[in-house]
Length: 370
Image (tube, helix red, strand yellow):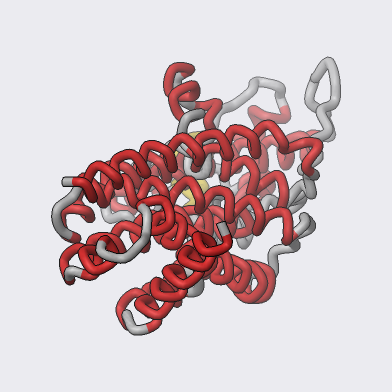
């Protein structure tokens, strides 16, 4: 047993040495855990931010001016005042996403209790801004109109919303962690798959076969070495980029998260080895990995909540390790969940990883025998 462990350790060192001399992969690692995390998290906002708006004030009343002034930064740009015949041109050119038209006698009809209507024209080609911005405008205008008429909305109960773990609803906090999850998935599959195929193309794998080594030892060496690299890069990215540059308060246990990451890498590296046994070259492996990686990223719950998907797809994605890793990442880092809370996902991730490893090992042995 001690000799087998020594073989696994030395083969892992060989993998690390090979990676150290691969300049392209090293640059990709640096990019994936720095720029590729910071830019989407800092620049991509899921809510309404700096939306362009314009006002057509046909009433010229105190309430119409008050409504125009209620659209403020950072959600909306200062509204541009337009005439009625400029509405179509402003929307057609894409200069304005929202154009609010306040009709004549709007204030008089409001004070008389006639429930007047105002028109909000929306450029729906900017889909996310249009969908959420309409709700923003409705809530802002309702608040202003109730305050102006000194009325309160007739509701049977008062709803008090409290946002936990992210009180200001900063989308960048979530995006930074999800980018790390996505990059870990990509790199775990690509690093192990390309390492195996590179050895096959260069003839290194044939040299290993004449040594007293087994397929299990070769696989375990690739798993621990690549997992070590990705775990270290993940820790540095969390500390320097997510916590440092983005200012995200990560309240959970870092050792627990890194341990879960290592378990996730066990599953993904096994999947990468399995895909490499199906491909005959690195370009073919890349084409084969695309339809595997993209569904893992898009349907894991990081991009779209699982609850929004069809039930059959939710059940199917429970067999993907990325689904459980997204849940574990947000639970540990944001909600400070302990093992007593997240153990079902840890057990599911371990089971999926073991299944992937055994399938990849059987396929790897078959290719070596051939």
